[in-house]
Length: 110
Image 1 (tube, rainbow, N blue to C red):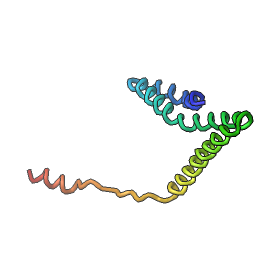
Image 2: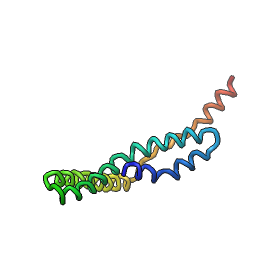
Image 3: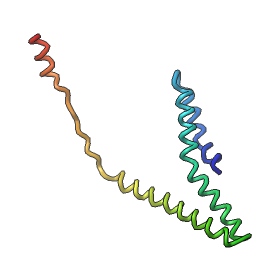
């Protein structure tokens, strides 16, 4: 499952490889990041499938796997709602204008 999740980012890796000069480096970086990011959801989904099978075969092993899967799934959903609530707020951006007049006056004096 982990490999399947990491392969979802394959087209993004190929698109980065097409950039001149730095493309191969970007493509390799995206591949490494995709592999790292896809580990937790891939393992959680695998534990869900394995847990369902083990509940039928041996409930003492399957139920903890299912509970761990539900816990990770709840963590993903909670994180999604947390980021959605944080992203809705406007961010203040300070605009700093260059002081061209002072630089021009200093250049004229010299």
